[in-house]
Image (cartoon, rainbow, N blue to C red; front, side, top):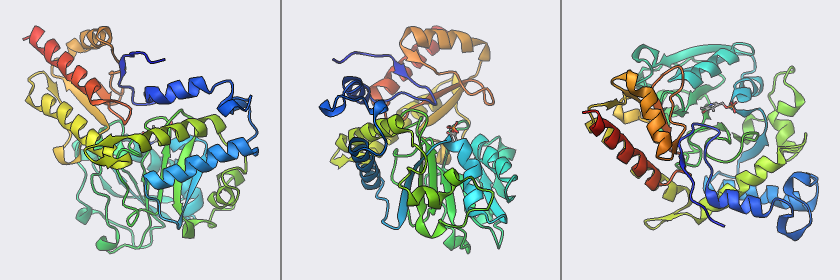
Length: 370
Ligand SMILES: *Cc1c(COP(=O)(O)O)cnc(C)c1O
């Protein structure tokens, strides 16, 4: 079974690799001949435990997660982590934020409930089209941690290099929200103490949240932290203190296997994906920058490889653009309401052929109106 589908540019929940969906469909009613679908299995049975352990090992391998970091499969998504991180790490004190778009802004706001957030730097004055240089960040001397969103899904701003806090004279652990670019590129763990991300952008279905946390940060939750959200409790119970989102973990595991099979120019896994993602982003931004109709306002040094917001200079054409795109099998290109215009999310599951089809359409649309 293999079919041709439209190209889906949704920001999330987003397109998944067809091979993964087909494998899940084939295993829906009986996983590996056991007579049960994955949704119907006890999370404590040997079948699901093997799925879980494989998924965890594959994620560790794909992202080269060092042994002193624990991998947790939680629930609540990135938005719940906006509370769960300060509940676990803030000790009720000062927490620094670098605000580079809508998601880090939301994180800082939620942290107010449990800690004292301090905005160390903000890109708001530029409409979130730039990232303030790390040397200009006003870091608190006593921050429990520093939070950044390493890829801003709405504003299309990405850190292409994670900040080196030690070089900035800070001992604060770095927390990154990598929801929308996890597994699109390697992670420099020497700079990161905790990374979290919902699955529905680049990994699998909504419902499972990845948390990768350095062991020394466990065990300091505030007394009001719900047990199911205490990282130490979750870690001590192999993410099974409560029933984990079993089917979402299984689907994420299939995506990890798919990623391990990917090859590109002598590279494999995440390195192969990164190479492809760079080529995809260059193709789309390159076209936008030379066009007279489309514009992306983000500083080229911090443009996201995953989420490409763009405006039509004549916004009266927006509806016609979207309708024509749909006719060409290019789906879910409407931009986020806070930015307007269009957004093409080109996650791992989007092949370069999809980006080429979008560019071809954009060129034709522009020509017809010239
Ligand atoms: C989508 C997204 C979230 C929110 O995820 P939920 O699953 O809705 O909680 C948080 N952060 C970033 C960067 C995102 O892209």
